[in-house]
Length: 446
Image (cartoon, rainbow, N blue to C red; front, side, top):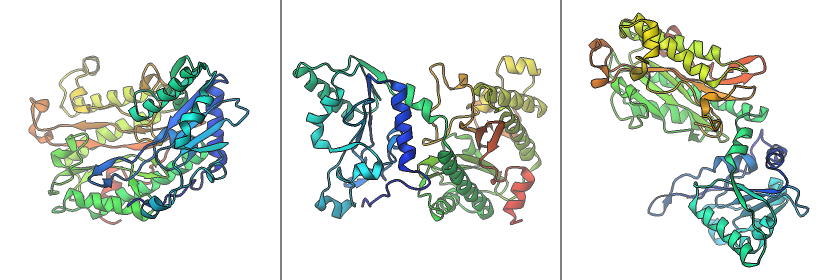
């Protein structure tokens, strides 16, 4: 059953969303139009839908959490620059699925200039497109929306009007705004980080041999809900033993065994903003000597990468720093038999590192921020939020042929969320223990 959702939740305000729309319109220019569709309900099975989650770009510009909407921005339009298409009020449907906002209340509630029922789009929207040089939208992502869009253009052509001649990917403009967070966004992300940190701490304290991975997952999700974060930002990963070597392991069905490590990659979504934390800790509460040695390599690499994440640095600096530290650590442990220079040049550590060190974070857990040249080429600046998450993995199988059997089945990742500030950076997830002594103390209730 679908229930009523709040409109704009504190700390966010109508003015915040209006400011975002104004900045986007200034960026696309007066001869353009921007069109942003919302998400729709997605069927899970039979007559049951998946929980609704708003499309992030639409939410960024409106704060509105209903399905089947379209936002149209027409810079310089004397009749109103912001138009919202949305579902009409419907007493019968609302009895089943919850109250709808409706076009009459939307302008005041959301700060848009005009709101229209979806059924009115056929006649009203083509007028908004007439004479505009460019349409900025998201192509290739929503076939149903694209069908509507091209029908509006066909309507213009049939009336011998002038439709926009050029399509532009709105992501190139809008994502440049989204990658730099406002103070209100940072406030929400800090809250998500705090809730997620508490969830990891509770999982550490609960952990013991004989439990199942899903029991730790249940404690994490319970903590999210307890603090008002009713959705994980992504499916939680709880991988014990060799399951930690599977990057996106979400079965979470195996039992925890004495002597194993367990890797938990979990974060909540608070007011649509994500946290993303990974911690790896011993099931029995004490690292073995071998586990601690490998853990320290990953922890050192993470610390060096966080230190490299300063204003003006390249995003690639984080990955390069982390990879070099991991490489040296593997040499020191005798896992790689090569000089440091040879190991770096030949990327000998790559089979054990698997993934990059970082990704941007925001309304999406793998948030926008890539440039035309790729994410790694971006220069870091104040307001950007990203993860730092080096890892080392030794799965049973051919990847680990030729190395000591004692390393096989170990997987360690440590991940925190980092905010770039004017004079450095801040670890948003600092409340979550990661030093081995602090992890052990937490697990023993200290």
